[in-house]
Amino acid sequence: MRTKRQGLIVWFKHMKNIRHIKRYGHLVYSSKKLKYAVLYTDQDTLERTEAKLRKLPFVSKVERSQKPFIRTDYENAKPDKAKQYDYKMGI
Image 1 (cartoon, one colour):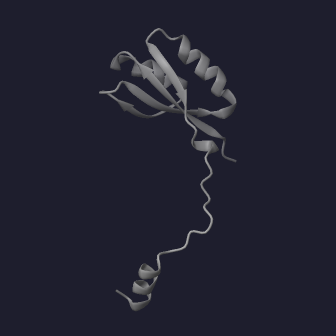
Image 2 (tube, rainbow, N blue to C red):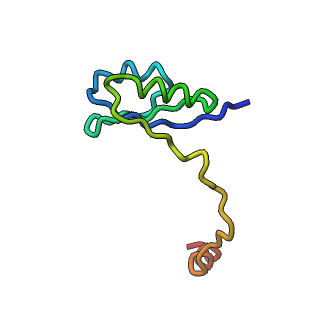
Image 3 (cartoon, rainbow, N blue to C red):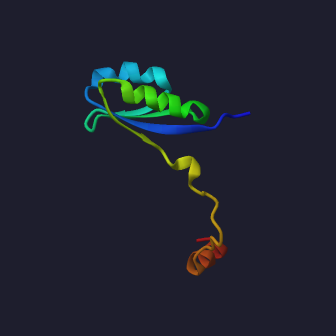
């Protein structure tokens, strides 16, 4: 069974601190220009990991991703009438 995971956005001061941030989860992306990293951790250990990251001297801010809580199943997704006609004609 898959574990529930959630993303953390970690803002830091120097790019050399990425090595330390990698220890707290699965590093997906890091931006050199804006100095932030996207990191995934298990939801059951999320609060502890977030607290540990906030205590680090080179971390300026930690934000949680809201992706697991956004509804992704859409209702009434009907195609456009013109496109539907073109598909039937084989264009």
